[in-house]
Image (cartoon, rainbow, N blue to C red; front, top):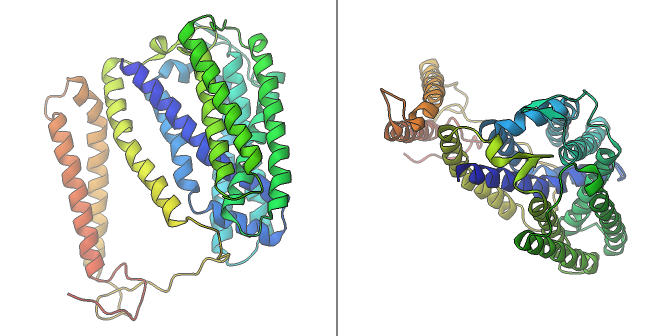
Length: 420
């Protein structure tokens, strides 16, 4: 039971990443064809939520590593090169985005790095997906293939399809978030990319039975109903997106593209489950021991609502059309409560650093013990103790920061008056 919950959490995290981070990767790729002003505008639009979007791929990686180690052991060696390239691209992309945003004006080098890194990340993700669908060579739970097995015709076609899908999502997002994205232009670009995405999906679907070594059991009633229902939903969402490009309301194409993407992922899952790595590695075979699964499901499952809340808060805070192209710099931070020019007392700063370092060290120690705790082999501390310590540490951190706030350490307006 727990292994299927972990599998569902991994699929949910991957789906959220593709839907959310797909559009900002698409915006980054679209910036390569835009002018200087548009490039900066696109970067500022993506900067509102890119870090929250990429949190989902971290959750997916944690689930695969701790909950489905059999998948991790086979898939990771098979895609070392594209995976490392993808991680490097994501790092460079975030660096370029933040540096360009902080520059106060257009910087061609940072803008181009943001665009090309977005393209590289999308291509690498498509190569990884294609390798997973075609089945890495394995024997007894270990990878036995070569270093370049990921570079197959089907993987390359899959990379092209992922790029087209992300460009489509980026176009839909730009129609929703920008005032200068003319509707006739959005109609032409969106419908062209939708046609390319549909052709790519059709080609990948027709070629999948020959590329995937496992047989598809569409003769099973439940599997067939779920698969064709997902196909029908994806087709309906594509029709809505086709009609919505270039028309009001501006949010409709992106909602349709997100629905199309989610339906496609669900259809692929219905076609292949419970096999996670073709031709025959199932969820049950790849799962970790019960204690590890329990710890993972509790830890990741409890953290997901916070990531969702962060996504919702970012979307609500930056709803509407993008207007301000330049981020206003913050004024200097205050350093004391009643004397703005005086630095904080060294003893106070030392206490803050010491308190936070101690909390971090204790948190790491408790995390290291937590798996054994939930596995029932701990002697000094139990699950209730872990929970109480976590709440106490969080309360201590918040109390310390509130005290520092009252002292004026975090005040961004030097002339502001403080109330006791």
